[in-house]
Image (spheres, rainbow, N blue to C red):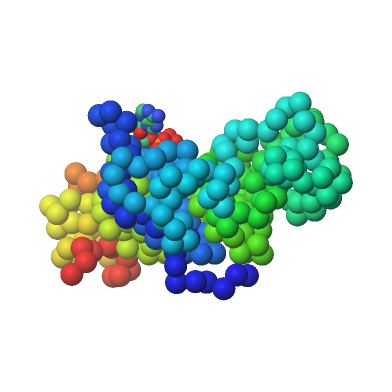
Length: 333
Ligand code: ATP
């Protein structure tokens, strides 16, 4: 592990990037600490990739300043930033072997063949592909290509690694496995990872901190628990975890405490004989480990998620909806 320094790895001050009329990034302030696993989370088109490209130096800000380890990034070309990128499509060279792909950055720097192949093999071992160096990218699975892209980006020991939806092309099982592996790798290397995703589960499970983007702006930055448990806005409550967002009149009808405006589906319990408001099951989705309901309570609709093993209710059933007193999110202050 590197010793955390007080100078942030990446600092944005009032950074904007406009493309004609499109405000892709609009006045973003951001500090990413050294050694942090930082996720940029948001819907499609919210400006995440543009922020990543601004850090890499593939884009220049229309306004504001970017610092990388305390140095002004303006005018510093991508290859001099000590920052590497793993692209969503991996961007491997198809005609080169896996080892040559991984060693590419060293070849460009004029490192001799024996040395660069030794380094490439070291990197391939790190991503658990020790015996794959002689293959061509086309002879690998999607998950293996992803690891090669990672090894290639790590070979010249960048201080910051940028990852643009790196797991997007993988199936669910492989994605979950790679989430754990990426996290472990990041911990052991101590490199700052900045990770773009539109998948809230991925961001919450991997990141030390998450920045939630909406329409070119960061609407909340915090640890996963903070963003999930105390969403700053309705947008965050809905986008991160699909909360029930509740209008003031509905809050009164549902007997929620004053100021409450959202409640997580999994915080709500259903029972035949509870104390809470009475509703009717409108729909039920069986999802293996859990059940997902929509319950109508008067004119209001609540999403409810219950764990497998709890009593199941069928559509049409009358149920009481209850929640612990501290479950609803209230406006701060
Ligand atoms: P996704 O998850 O779909 O990749 P994103 O959050 O990464 O989305 P960006 O790719 O940063 O979003 O794009 C933000 C906005 O800027 C979008 O409206 C996009 O169309 C626009 N945009 C991005 N790059 C350009 C460009 N080179 N020229 C014009 N508009 C652009």
